[in-house]
Each structure stands twice: as C-alpha cells, then as structure tokens.
Length: 363
Ligand code: NAD
Ligand code: TYD
Image (cartoon, rainbow, N blue to C red; front, side, top):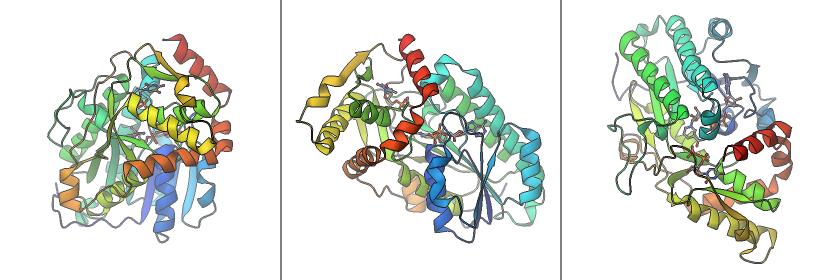
C-alpha cells in the first residue's frame, strides 16, 4: 500500500454520505463554497436526523447534488460509483446517538457497519485502476473517539490506544473502522480515518446534550442530567472538525488515522450550568433562573466516564489546530439556536417527542 506523506489528494468528485445530518451539513456548507471546482454528491437516507433545511444555502449551487438513499443499498451505491466518477468518499452517514443504540442496536449494525462495508466494496471495484496514481482516490471514514472506551481521571486517547468500545453505537463504529483498515491492508484501498471527540455547533439534532439543554431551557422544560453529571467530554466546534477533515483528506498520509480533539474537557454539570447562564443572559432572564430546570435522572447504562484526546499527531503532521476558543464557540452556539427557533421547532416534531417520551420511560 502506498504510504507517503508527500501524496497530495486533489478531490474532483466527492461522495458525501450523511450530508443532511449535523456534521455532514456543516461540512457541505463549508466545502461546496470553498471549492467551486469540485463536485459534491450528498447521499442521505433522511432518517429522523437528516434535514434538507440545513442545506438550503447551497441547494442550487452548480457543484452540489442531493440523492436520497441508503448507504447499505449495494445496487444504488454501485450505480452511483459507476455513473458519477467519484474520486473521493467522505463517509459521515451513521446512526449516531448512544441512547438510541441502547434502545435499538440493530439499526446501528445495519447502517454503521453494513453501510460502511457496502461503500468500501463499491469503492474497491470502482477504483480498481488506482495503482496508476495513488493520490487519485481517497476513502475518508469519519469516526469517533468512543471506539477507545472510557478513561479515568487521567490520560488521553492517542492513535496508539487499543479499541475498547462499550456501547452498541461505539461497537458498530469500531467494527466499521476495522473494516476500513482491513480494506486498506488487503486491497490497498487509499483510506483515511479520523476519530473525533464530541462536536457542537449549528444544526445538531436536539437529542444530543448541548442543543437539548438550550431547547429545553428556552421552553422552560426540565434539563435532564444523567447520574451526578460528573462524566467528562471533550468538546470541539463542528467547523473545526470539518476543517480537520479537509486537511487530512488532502494532505494526510493514506492509511493513517488522525485523532481530532478540542482540548476542551468539561464535566456535564459544568457545561450545562454554563449553557443555562448564557441562555438566561441572551433571553434577558434574571441570572440563575434556568438553573432551576436542572433535573438529575437515572444514569445511562454503561455510561463512559471520560473521553479526552491527544491531537499532537494531527497538529505536528498537518498543522491543524482548533480556531474557536471554547468560550466563543459555545456562546456562538447558544446564540445560533436561540436565533434559529424555527429550526428547533421543525425538528422537534411528533416522532422526536415520541422518542423523548420513550427515553424517559427507560429511565
Ligand atoms: P447525525 O445523526 O446528525 O447525522 C447522520 C446523517 O446520516 C443523517 O443525515 C441521516 O439521515 C444519515 N443517515 C443515517 N443512516 C443512513 C443510511 N443508512 N444511509 C444514508 N444516510 C443515512 O450524525 P452526526 O453527528 O452528523 O455524525 C456524523 C458522523 O460523525 C457519524 O459517523 C458519527 O459517528 C461521527 N462523529 C460524530 C460526532 C458527534 O459529536 N456528533 C463525533 C465524532 C464522530
Ligand atoms: P451526548 O450528547 O448524547 O453524546 P455522547 O453520549 O456521544 O458523549 O451526551 C453527552 C454527555 O451528556 C454524555 O455524558 C451523556 C450526557 N447527557 C445527559 O446528561 N443528559 C442528556 O439528556 C443527554 C442527551 C446526555
């Protein structure tokens, strides 16, 4: 397999999977405008988490096209590879919520594992001539730090950390990472993998902690904190994650893994407390009002205690660093959701409310 840091990949036609979701839509909004000479095809099934409203700013762009479909639909995926001439895949599509994976794991195996293998199969056949030019193609797999399991009070995940997934979500993502590496090793497929910490920013579905807190505070509903709120996550602004993917895609060494993190660890309780203060400030409520909404609920089964990333490799090899300070990024995010209440109202539909009820019934 080719492995040289001097191999620069120049995407010409990019298949973006899951581009109507949180990170995928932020990626497309940035890249379609940043690279007008590159074609982008967004393949998304439009599950509850996919929302074309996220993409209205680029829906008429000359270099963007949407295809509704399932990444695990082999016939569709093969046809797209045969007819579109993809040079590049950026694979975001996934079932992404740990709590849903605890309620119903099979959809996670189907999309995250089977879907990834379906894409890998299509890419290895379509790119059979890749030995002519090793830089011509790239399969970028977007993964998570959750594949590494849970840390105690000290230490960081790095590229050398052994896999130890502990939820159905992280197990299905770990399986997909293993398949991506197996295709690189066995078939010489030019791949990149990134494992990123928790993202935050615009267009995140409000089943995840940060938009959930903002939405519930806005409507003066209880803000659920699992257990004692002492679990720790590292938070990275989604724009910084998208820019890391862009850098790795173009200049990363084929076959390598890069860990992406925000150097921004917070306990859930600290984070929620800060967000609620910001909501009060923006809405002009007396300081401390929304803190009363905090409600401690039964813990998530198997709840990983701490995630933290050592992103030295990405910084030293490719010069990437987060551009958002944690304070500015979180404040901008609170403002975004409070300025975009129609978006929150639209995704907070009957099916979401049914899920939310089910989540509470499970606790
Ligand atoms: P998301 O749930 O917001 O979006 C997922 C998107 O994939 C949706 O648009 C959905 O419609 C689409 N999708 C789901 N199943 C599909 C299928 N079978 N075929 C085609 N499309 C399908 O997820 P996200 O938070 O944007 O995460 C994107 C990727 O980044 C995932 O692979 C996730 O594991 C990874 N990741 C997420 C985070 C995070 O904090 N959100 C952190 C690290 C890595
Ligand atoms: P989440 O946003 O679901 O991301 P992940 O589980 O992938 O890290 O949750 C972030 C943290 O917040 C996690 O420790 C679980 C916790 N949490 C709550 O305390 N309350 C909630 O309502 C949710 C959704 C999460």
